[in-house]
View 1 (cartoon, rainbow, N blue to C red):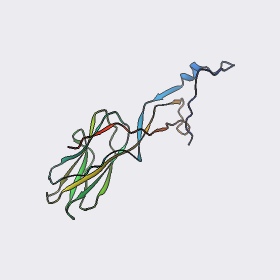
View 2: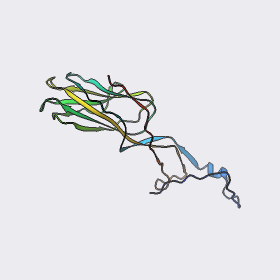
View 3: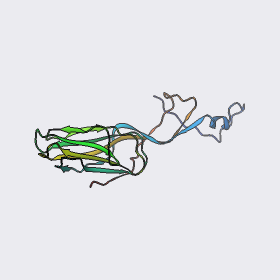
View 4: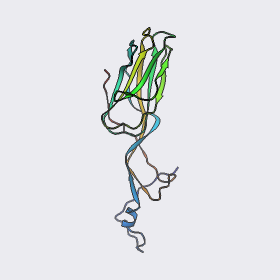
Length: 179
């Protein structure tokens, strides 16, 4: 893979006039900042929380303070009693997203969810519940995995094998605010 190398317009002098700064700038396009889902942990809310409720109960919450791109969310779930089923589900701004995850094990099982990009001030939440109220549903290690891609320029026509973004390793701003 080749990375796009930025070039400077200004001091360079092109003698024949066939290529000018104006011609070059008219073929450049700016791509906004975003992120891609990866296996690199960038943010976490690792506190363990539990509930014995039989209806979905909010246990974990992160406020996403700025717009994001794509990422994946991982969390651990376990039951306090072997063989008794517990559930957890990702919510976005109080609305269920995707399908619920479940386990009957007393050791943590890690689940992965791929939500859409977030807007500033969105809430990422994990709700959990016990099937019959006979055990506690434990949730821990709510983690966000992604690589940010900084703003970059590419030349038209775009060539994905030559022009690409370099990862930006700065985590998004989030606020952990478990209930």
